[in-house]
Image (cartoon, rainbow, N blue to C red; front, side, top):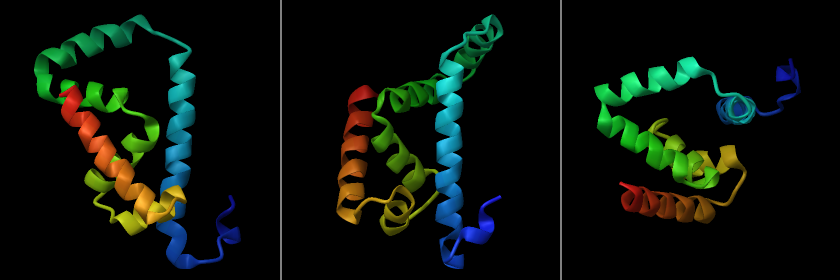
Amino acid sequence: MKRKKLKDEQAFTPWLIRITINCCMDELRRKKRMFPAEKLVEEAVQEMKSNERIDLERAMNRMKPRYRHAVILKYYQDMTTAQIAKVLKKPEGTIKTWLREGLRQLRNYL
């Protein structure tokens, strides 16, 4: 709806990623309010399938959101620190610190 207000065409991808992150955070907040019983059964089945993936997901969920976002953008989306800094609207040095701290927390949790 607001695509025409975007001034820089090259900023489209980071802009879209930021919108996606915000929508996902809204959805997570909404889902925290309800606990369907079906989800608990599904989680038990998935845990039996892949313990390592579940361990990683649990470790990621324990991280602070800023560290988690930086790690996900870096290692799941293959973005550079400069691109992550643009998406999260933070200095590159801050992003590097968040990545280092996020990886340290993951090591501790795993």
